[in-house]
Length: 163
Image 1 (cartoon, helix red, strand yellow):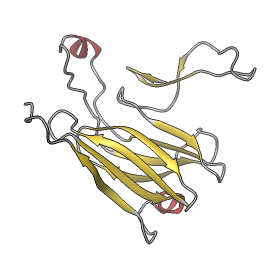
Image 2 (cartoon, rainbow, N blue to C red):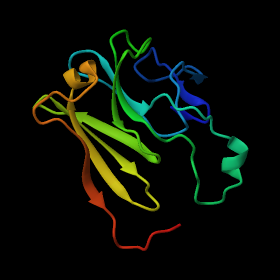
Image 3 (cartoon, one colour):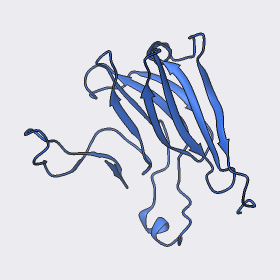
Image 4 (cartoon, rainbow, N blue to C red):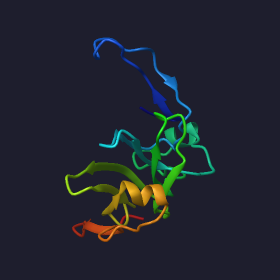
């Protein structure tokens, strides 16, 4: 789960009837939505912000009003764990720009992983996609024939930029 201090976790040992109390996990994050799912290979895939430097200031966020300025939503990265989330040694940077967030992904029958996210939702209002394979992430770069990063899916043009 998303928290102001990174990513939290809870567990169920009875087919999701009851849950343990929430606690902070060892996976860091800048208080932004993240994606995590098990791939067909059995490895875990997460798409999250990686190697950010500045922790969110809760008091600052609470005093900003309705439109928030979140810190460190940059360096959106696909990461793979082979040891059930203990470590994430395989990484592929999807988008290094500021204000990239809210990733989601789907592993398709064609072997590609299709990941979507937004970029500057208030000013640029872009939805982007990355098309990559598990091997691309393991190698740390796009090597697949149809792999591509930062594919523009939609750009909302109906309202003037808000600054």
